Image 1 (cartoon, rainbow, N blue to C red):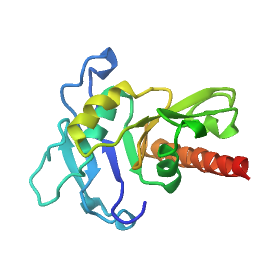
Image 2 (cartoon, rainbow, N blue to C red):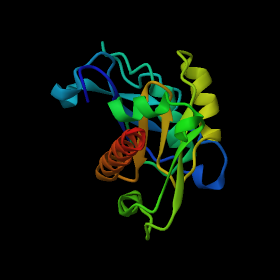
Image 3 (cartoon, rainbow, N blue to C red):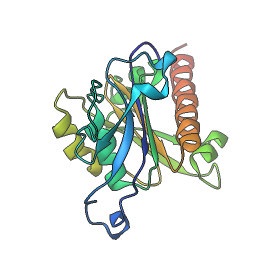
Length: 195
């Protein structure tokens, strides 16, 4: 994570009724504070927020501007941790056109590394959705659920970066790493095709 880019969160209170398909009524999660250097984080750089992204305790820290997107992911998945990173490869691919096989998502199949996303075989086809970026986080949080696929623990904001989640911090980290492998693979594949 470069400089102050990206944000990390972890669920504290599990939404009890989320599994019924109804919106969660109440939960809290820790999220990185806005403007913190992600390479030098300490426990003092996280703050507790509620389902609406509001700080749950008094203090001088301001939650990440993208807190509502984390909340939307928690409401609509079984995630316990959400990591958002601005990688060069995810950003680059999200800006490509349909001639490169990219528009509303990036497809992968047949790669052994797909197993790192929880699939039992490499013989699957996945699509990592791409959402048009906006500075209106309420709007993004409202449309994100329509892009979420519980089987594919990630989505990309166009020109911005990937959100990856998991049922633990370790799983979310692994998913970020697997997605980055896939994106690097695709960038190199496209480069070889042009040569």
